[in-house]
Image (cartoon, rainbow, N blue to C red):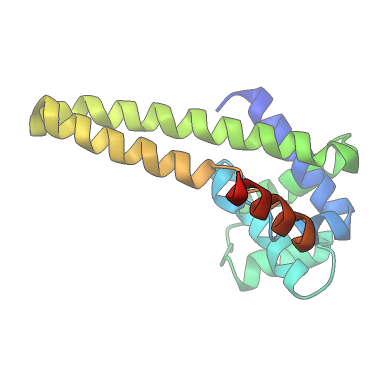
Length: 171
């Protein structure tokens, strides 16, 4: 993963660490934990855990979370995770940028997974033949598209929708 994409993810994490309301909103956002690079899995899990408890993830709470739930017992791994926490917290990102940054995380995820699927295609082509590999690639790319699709809800006034529907029905 490129350094730019890592930086974007860490800006998102910075916002989630410093703004409790953004962390709460992220909990129901379509761009969830699986869209991020695996190096950020533990800190994002910690943010989700603390959000479920109704609190922000502090440095001490993250250290406890790593020991209790992620079973990080190695001093080197613990130091690396705490360094990541500090690095993310120091990123300069504004809460208003969160939607744009999450969209960039989503785009990066799509690119990363597409490359993985095409690399798998090369291997599958030798084992399954071209048609079998094509079928598998199509299924994987369609699943990726469905997974990464933006789900937006539009709310309309029921009476206005009814009038519009009835007019279209009469015409």
